[in-house]
Amino acid sequence: MPGPAAWSLFRQRLTAHRHYWRSSAIGSVLEPVLFLAAMGLVLGSLVDRGPGVPGGVGYLAFLAPGLLVAAAMQTATGESSYPVLGAIKWDRTYEALLATPARPVDLVAGHLLYVAFRVTTSAAAFLLVLLAFGAARSPLVVLTVPVALLTGLAFAAPVTALAARLEEDAAFAALQRFLLVPMFLFSGTFFPVEQLPAVLQGVAYATPLWHGVTLARDLALGTAQAGPALLHVGYLALWAAAGAVFAARALTRRLVR
Image (cartoon, rainbow, N blue to C red; front, top):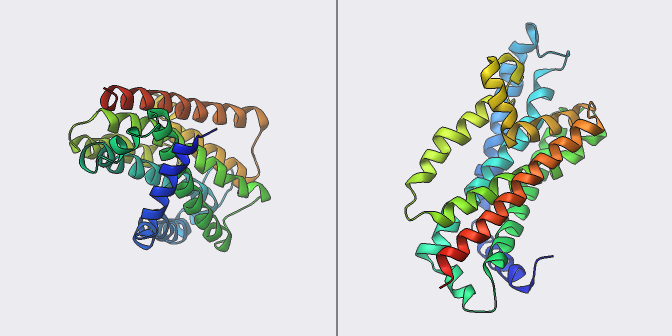
């Protein structure tokens, strides 16, 4: 369980968030919703006139849960890149906290608590839009929110570990350009991974986003099975746990003297 210092950091981040929540909602909720409307309704009408998505599923129903999880990835990585480096190097917030009985592990826990709040609230808002669009096929669609949360943590923890090791922010642009955008495009969000060349299919299957997208889609469509679902959850949890351990170690090496 997170200690008092972790909750203190969470409350500090939450207080700061109250001053800019409207602008953050544009990137985490409004932009994915507009993307869903453009791709799911406009492009989806063209896809559905042709062969459509394998399995006879409408493109909107196929796309919506994938976008929900992909938006969680973007929110989590955004909150774990510049804000973490800023708290270490520019604002010195973490140094101030470590002057108290707080430990690096408390900083990681408090940060991930805030990320969990951001991802959960954004995913819940997106879910309401998904339901309004009629893109759900099963009551299990409500479980896409915890799936988005777990996927977000699977990205937030490793990115936090990366940010804790950086001196400059240039690596974040490379992270976005060469990892996050390709994952967003080729991890099953927009089309089945099986349509990729065999070698790229293996790469896609190894990404946390594919596991999150696939699990959320199975839940939304009512096709989830216990075995594969547990595999997806375990894989995402492994990324989150390992990333948290590396993040705590990186903060210890950098800030504890």
